[in-house]
Length: 187
Image 1: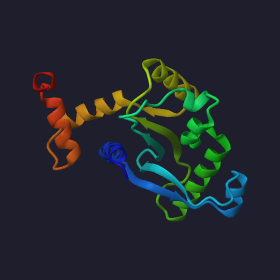
Image 2 (image 1 turned 90 degrees about the vertical axis):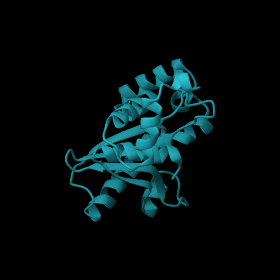
Image 3 (image 1 turned 120 degrees about the vertical axis):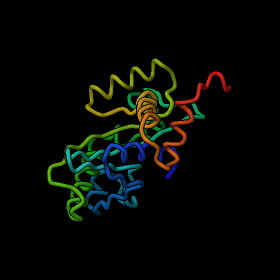
């Protein structure tokens, strides 16, 4: 699990979710053929997060892209298949449906979730290509009913953690140092 995924997972755990990183979905041979990937290994999801109190199951794709160009709208609506392939769960509706259904079946089989969970597809993003791309991606996600966990969401969550009582976790320490320190005076 990469550091960005650890950050996002830690935030969800603070909100009462159990979180599983790099979750392998056990697709059947028939399902692999149906999504046109007959030789595919198990399907891997960056994070899944579940909260029994609200019966919410979140499927979270994480893209930090902090030292790269960032996430752009072309990854979702453009004709660049290489870009779109990085966001398969968002760009291939049938694939998403098959993976989600198998995930639910798998989790119900182990009694890890309650029946009929509310499914929320999320994308956690550390950096966008531009403000224009960020606005366009937000609009698309609102239209599709997906949840965008952008850098502003991350900052809001870190501020809340910094205001909370101390816990001996990397997330708390970093949040408290960054938020409580007058960063502009230090740098």
